[in-house]
Length: 98
Length: 305
Image 1: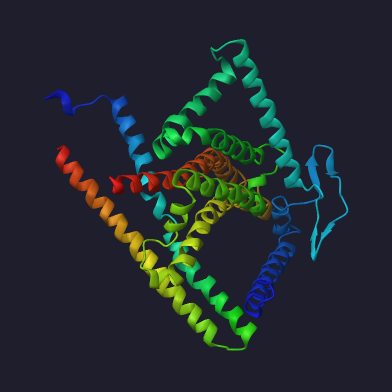
Image 2: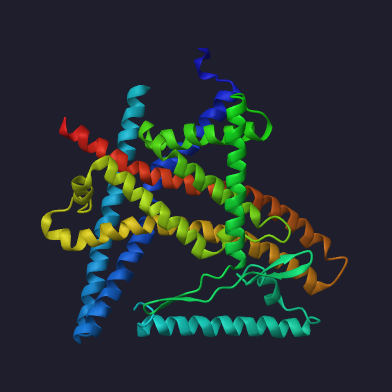
């Protein structure tokens, strides 16, 4: 069958589409690392502000860090889980097409 | 408030000490290396109150700082502001020329043809796949972003030029606009109620105290990444070129000089490519993040059916 031997133009086109697709697919997950780190840092400073404002050091910082770590991790875990689910869905649809 | 924090002040103080130490070492090594001070090369990248020209340094107009409450805002024109305005004017002139040539004839020629190629590429390969037909209404913003960033990136590659995108304030400004556009497109596509509901991240109500701030934080991390990516890429290339120039001045040898120069030409070509690539990546990711809002609304509609 000749259907599996596309000309070079089509191959270039496919490669270009693949790069675009990769960006589109992984774009939403490009910032999950920053988000995890930012969650801890921001909540730490929020806790520190509470400590200074109400004189409850170090409870504010500890609570802040705990919330940051837990919340950041939940968000990270959910993002990765949805990425895996997307990949599984793509794999299943590819198999169906073949 | 943030800068008054003792931990932040401590970190800033340590960073300043480290910077001063590095500068001192560079200066001392410069004294031993025949009067060459590497820090002088880095002055080229810093913002200043004058622009370089074949006639020497030209001073820019300075204004009295404006006081708004406790804040003092200096609206004086600096080197980067000058190039920011210059790039804006050049962009307006170029686009007016393109618009006028389309009034004369719908068949593009030369420069207009080149611009049409880029515009069509952005529409077909960036906006439509990421945002669908609904994204076409945001084309003017995305095209302006692309061409403005491109022209600013290229401004640093011409003699006596400076790269405004090598200043974090400029990239932060662009990121703030991108942030506003991402939120506006999401609210328009989903409606305010669904947009606010999306901020809970699908978590049960007892986790909202934790998840809502995290989701709100997530809204800011995307433009923050855009801002840092563009700034770091534009600064990085310039530092590499200046470091290689530093080698020529440090060794002061005709035998050594050609090798760094060869690398400089190579890096310069790479910078030329990076100027286009970063403008593309900024536009591409902005449209992608804007498209996520539209997709969220279509997912919601799908789940209703």
